[in-house]
Image (cartoon, rainbow, N blue to C red; front, side, top):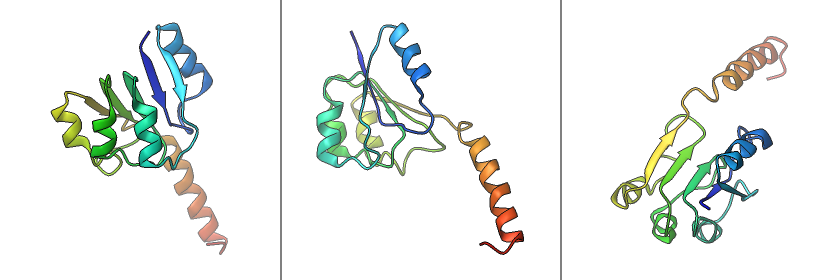
Length: 123
């Protein structure tokens, strides 16, 4: 059974995990948004997929620690700042994806809330 590492704590919910399980994947969560490089190196070993949603950085060292990784998906816009090892990943044949529309609703809500707070003199 292929295994997927999830560090996302904002966009991947239990129902999403269940969809992955129903598709035949084992799901492993690393509930530490600021995981260290060493913790990530340990966590990615043996994983076929990695859903990145924390604020950890996926460096060349983390990429080199992978032994079965096929894909990394960043739950946000862009990925190069969160995956500085993206060139090394490409060299190893690891696909990288992102979810450019996932934070759209949250950003819109935050913008409206910020505007209201500034209007009230809170910010």
